[in-house]
Length: 390
Image 1 (cartoon, one colour):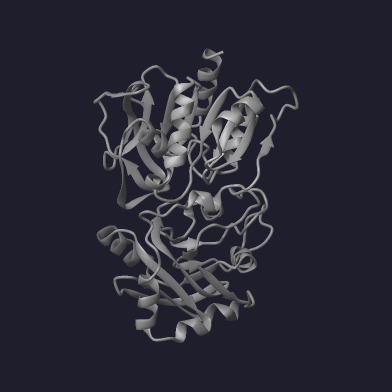
Image 2: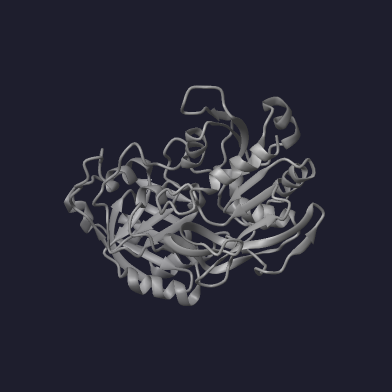
């Protein structure tokens, strides 16, 4: 929930008071930037040093107040090229930073971060001790939070805590349908020639760089709303494969999508999933999911591929994960499956696959926006899978 009032983006406006309130009663006072008013969400932190525009426009951050561990944010401004949502919408509920750069120095910038946040009604707070906030979240876990700025910051703290604590929990939240496209749209191959393959891509909160990666490889991507019935889509578009995107919310609420994936597996159609798509494939194979204490968010997370022994540095953004361990194959109605990847930081499941090769998924973001390119060849792996199935 976000309510805003207009405010100029002048340097003087940075003295406007703002307050970050956590549901457990912790309070951090700072100064407002961007829009002003009240915003509520789950407080999470990201360890990325760069790429705040890609982070803020990632639909997976819907209903989350993002705390940046990088000490200064805003020096590269905002441009019209790096947004990761359809229509370049900012999805974060709010932004918490230590220092806002007063100077935009990147040649690609079209405007400042604060100007874009004000234009889109996104509330921010600066001048707080983000190290203390992150340490608190690491100890206590991601918690309900709220930012109150301008006149809204003058209310009693008890009212803030009550408002923060009264918002719905992320556990049990069905958010993918809130960020998904309402209409089908098609991204054609970059080369302007006939597509090698056609992929049905379920928009659970898809990042724009994903269909862009398919397009660069000569693939036609048909992006469809979450929970769409798969069988008529396969017929209408003569699809060669199915992709399940990243997205926000609790995977335990995605029963309809789990059923669509099971239909794909029954038909032996190649399937590739990323992030939320990894959790949906896992549930379709009979695995359970759970909420992580504070999640993985950043562009520097090491993941090992247990099939090859290769370690990739990855971009991640997830608060839920699959239950399982590498090295323990398990039976499913679609054949034997196994955990293929785990995180080197905490052994969290980072990938699953059917042993027959027809379906695989990873928890991280191989589209590399914004992040390392280590995992980008997974798109080629999916294409090889479709080639072998034709």
